[in-house]
Amino acid sequence: GQCSTFVAVVTEVTGCVADDSVTICRKNQIIAEAGANTSICINDSSCITYTLNGTGSTAQTYSWFNASLSPTTYTGVTPKICLPVSNFLNPEPDSFKIILTASFPNCPDAKDSVLISFNDYPKPNAGGPYKICSGTVQLYGKGTFTTQLWTVLTPGGLIINGANTVNPIVQPSGSDTTMFLLTTINAATGCSGSDTALVIVGGNIIPTLVANPTLVCVGAPYTLTASGGSN
Image 1 (cartoon, one colour):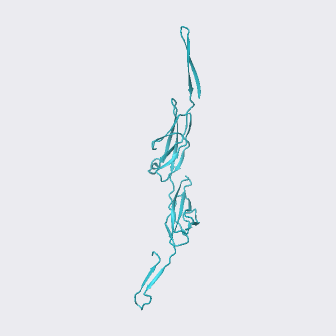
Image 2 (image 1 turned 180 degrees about the vertical axis):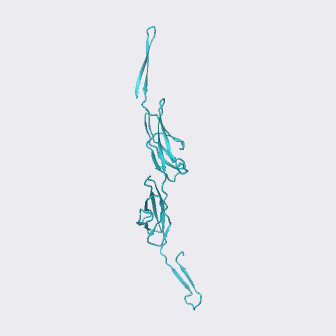
């Protein structure tokens, strides 16, 4: 800013002279920049933590305001805020216009705003649980977007083919259960969602069939008893 000094000179009829001075400084223009508009992915949380990215100069205080936030006012240039997801799901307005105010005593405030929009996330269904005796199995997932990826969560499991489809063929690990993860991505927004599928190996089945008695006459009754499985 620039400063100017003013001097007052007082002369009496007696010829006495006295003076005094005062300096007034002009403050540079106050600047408030709330940052670029942006969009974020929601999740299952009740609120999304987001850091505002404001800048400014020559101001003494900075405050952010939106009536839908709790609290409604945040201070500082880059505060962390909580964006309530309920405003997207109800549905209410799916965006927040947050106003940044930069202030300095005896100067006009400077204001700017940023618009934060919500994007929903994919909700895939990996299906299952899948029960097999041995070998491989095909998974039957469902996804709402065209980009998907299967990964193995249990060491030893394999994806034989179709890792980028909703219906891959997989091979479980040597353990009784193997977990696979289906992730789907909305390429337009970058938002992703996931679900897990459980493959259960039933183990080696050893059937047993017993006849009682084993020697009968023609027309005589006998009983067969099978075991070694659930059906």
